Image (cartoon, rainbow, N blue to C red):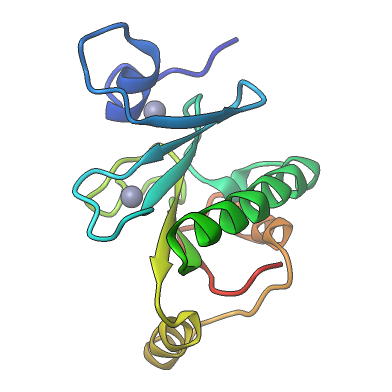
Length: 156
Ligand SMILES: [Zn+2]
Ligand SMILES: [Zn+2]
């Protein structure tokens, strides 16, 4: 069964035939899409999302997150090569009742070329007292149904 939310902008963009601008860069396994971000402030800034409606990556199973991590690593390498820039990933994951942090409640990961990933990490880390370091994206499962910010500044 396809999980589709008619009130979701991304679902509507992915599933409706219309005259909308096609922002798709690539599709993966008929389950994920990579597309260019709206109003991107840097070349290569893109978004990786489920085609179907899910509220967060943390809500998925470990095995699926491991596949996602392999795809994200590949995307990171490709975008780094294409734009001669290092790349970070970020997700504002939703809990059960959050409304999407002024964005939307369809799980998506931002892929952002930056000059200095370590500097981004240190700025984030120094402003958050509740940071938890993780070794792999599958560790997100502990945040299932809870709100979180996922930030990946180095490969792996
Ligand atoms: Zn959606
Ligand atoms: Zn967002």
